Length: 180
Image (cartoon, rainbow, N blue to C red; front, side, top):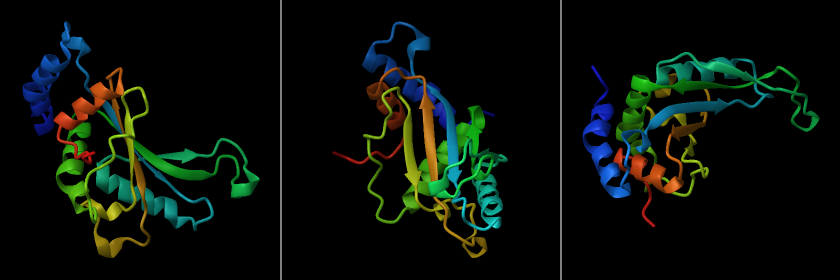
């Protein structure tokens, strides 16, 4: 069974985008490629910080994260080569749509004083990146079992060639942008 948001994309979003931008080919219509969730870890924290972040990221996404390691030594940050500095998960297809649905429907409304996310965080190539300052906005995380609050970066990668087309796609999928 396909994800609820995928059926919304095929039934509502594709005809709306085709009508608005006058695409001549079905393959020109933008779509989601992947969602990348990244948690950076301070290298000077204790060793359990990386395992805690990986456990939280596993609960949030349902996938095992990949550990990111530093590429070179940086003395000012007390960083050594091949030291673990974070973890990330790449979601595609059904897992991506399920995560996006949970993010929009249940996680983002739990942010305190939430008025929408900035529509100016596109990178110029149709990708949208934003940060979440606390992992406890996700209902999968139990408040009693966390030792430290950890933020994360979420990147939504689309096939849209411009930011305006990507904005239309993400807005039609139900993403809460702040009003200007």
